[in-house]
Amino acid sequence: MKLSDSEVKELENIYVNGFKVAYDRFYAKQYASKAYNSEGLDKYATAKIIGRMMGEDVANQTARREAYNKQYQIQSAKKYAEVVKKMYEDSFNRLMNIFETNSVVELNSAELIGSVNDNMFRAGEELRVQFSVSNLGEVSRPVTMIFDNSQDVIANAQGYVFSAPALDKKNYVSNVLGMISNDKFAQEEISLAMNIVNPGNLAEVAKPLIVRKNERITLHDYAEVKRINGSLNYLTGDLNLVVDLENPASVSAPSTAQVELFIDGAGKALDKDIEPIAAQSLRSVSLTTNKLDPLDVIAKGKISGVINVKMAGRTIHRKAFEIRVSDAPSMAIVRYFDGLATGEISNSGNESRQDRLAKLGSMIEDSVVASIRTRMKWTKTNEVARTAVAELQKVYDESKRQGTLKGDSQRNYDDLAATLAKHSATLVARGILNDRKNRKYYLRELAKISPKLDVNWKHYR
Image 1: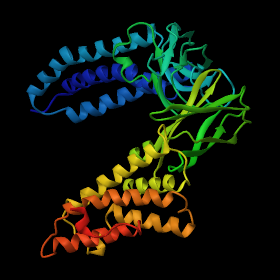
Image 2: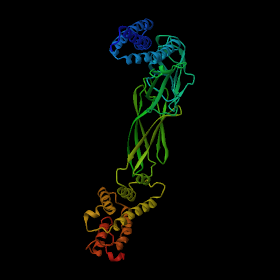
Image 3: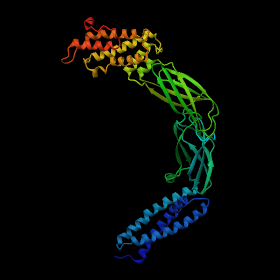
Image 4: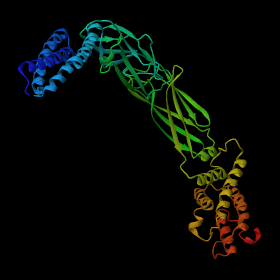
């Protein structure tokens, strides 16, 4: 059965009232918050008028579309009027009451300000904030801007308290809100959070409200390690580093800095004072030490450590470095032995030259014995090339050409060859190779570093 005119009017009125309240309360407030400026009050009044007109139009259109010709739909509409419409009205009245009786402050923008105008943020620096807020509420009450307290930033517990004018947008500059932690270094990235704390309970209004800004910043200081270049002579224990320091600030460094070289496992090697670096400039610093034990460096296969930069007694930056030994460990041992044997190298660590030569000889012997245990063929050039004996031959020939084999130099090689020759009796051939032939070729290889060596295998049984 088709609805009568009076029934249609009744249904229409239900929707008109419901939507009129909804748009008057909700849409107007949303319009006001989005189109906000210094003419906020006028905009707010205009928004209310627009909201009411839209509410009436939507309600009318909805009523026509929903006007079905079955009687039970009238009963459904009446139930809406009794229950749902009341819920709508209560909800939007509560929302409107929040805006009418509270400061509802939203954070529009925020920019960090340091305590020194040098175009950077340093560890230990105090921070303020230049920020803009909009008060969407119809009253003005004290609001707080505050930092989160964290391992990166020590926050001022009181924050910055201000009162934003009702229905207006305004800019502020806070007092000191916190300090960057002192245990941070230049080129570290830190996180901080700025928060607006509104008074009172804003209920559901607080959910979409923007009251927090997170920011990540990279710290800098007046003397940072930009790069480290270096060279290592592992045979002499000499380390040479060139450290490029940079001042990224827009002002000159306020005081001298101290550059420290720390070597892993050895501690502080040296330090050097550096005059203040000009704004946005580089300064190169040379650091040299010859106190490294070659055998320690060879065992590690590298030299590594840290460059520290200090200012006013505090470490402001640090950067690690690593330089690897240029030779494989077995060849490095052989070259070190040759350097001490020929007298070209004097660094024997904390031992006497002869004790260090004996230790190196034992290490070379261990390597040769390991090759012997593989039952390799000393008649095969490609197999010999993979042994410490071949490395000894190569280094020995280099020293011979350079004329460094003089005095007791050859005697050191003779002693080592004689020690290695004693192992000839342990050689066992692989496959069809005769043991005696294998031993004979082994001794011939040793004779290349000791021409006077007895190569008769029978004498070593």
